Amino acid sequence: MSGRARLMWDEAVTKYDFGAGHPMDPVRLALTMGLVRAYGLDQALDVVAAKPAGPSTLRLVHREDYVEAVRAASADPGLADQAYGLGTMDDPAFAGMHEVSALIAGQSVGAAEAVWRGEAAHAVNFTGGLHHAMPGAASGFCIYNDASLAIARLLELGAERVAYVDVDVHHGDGVQSAFWDDPRVLTISLHEHPRMLFPGTGWPQETGAAGDAEGSAVNVALPAGTGDEGWLRAFHAVVPELLADFRPQVLVTQHGADTHFEDPLAHLAVSLDAQRLVQEACHTLAHEWVEGGRWVALGGGGYAVVDVVPRSWTHLVGIAGHAPVDPESVIPSSWRDEVYARTRQLGPGRMTDGRTPTWSAWDEGYDPADRLDQAVLATRRAAFPLRGLLA
Image 1: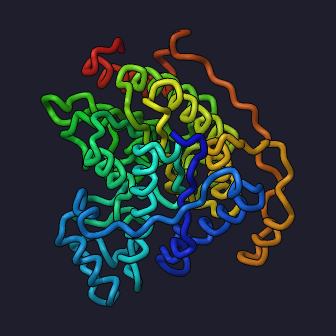
Image 2: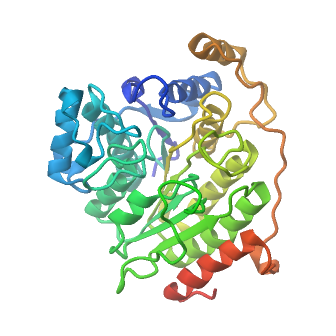
């Protein structure tokens, strides 16, 4: 296996643009790649552009009638069919929508192929992680579900155990749905409680289809206001033990940056520094429990498009490339100039929020009156026994 990591990038992904005022501003992608270049990480990883996902690949997850509806809306946004979730406030139709959505999906599929075939140890597509799209409908700013397509491609190539870990603030509902009845795929999602946030799913009791797949879905529903200590405690109380038991052949992770305390669309209070620690933990877990250390890392949500998203995902790229960025480093002025030129905002000055997050390990005991511990315990009691693990 190649020791170098791969970064999937094509400038055309910035055409994934729902229009002025929409939270999913493509400037977040351009600014992330600009910061990656400012730190020289494009020299530490192999930067590769994959082909768009073709019809046969899209059909691994999406219904043919849905793909045709996306094509029609892409050619003429006035033809968007809301029965397919297109032309809505969340997912406005735009010209070229099919082409750029297929391109983003192609980067995730290409990343999966590269790590499976041993062409790269790790691969990153921060433009992906569009985890809400369903087989027959757009949802939550997501047209094609690139994460599900990457996993489906791995299964097609012969993988028998794929683990998916989603730390976006929103539940990874589309990926869970795609593999609900497939015991070959373990989906784990840590997200804000569904009572508080879209898409309203991701309860601890959602554990996979009855039968062989029961226990293949794991959900941690975090209380609103959860900060660094609770978020890290929940992650380490659930994810490592499940991966150690499952021993996946590939680890796919989704790193939505919208858990951050500055994000305008959610209610968690996580810092950039805690996000980086979870990225590092995923890297470590890949080397510890995954055959060959195969790791595909995706982006996801994140709507603080200047202050948070570029820094978080640049850390992710550096970690995957075994060239981590020093959190205390001063961000190059060339990038801050780019930020101002594109947005007329002042960019952040350092790669840290100034936090030093700590957390207490679950095996040291828990407090049954604590809301965070209640959430973790609900997950462990619902899912762990189904996998033969102690709650």
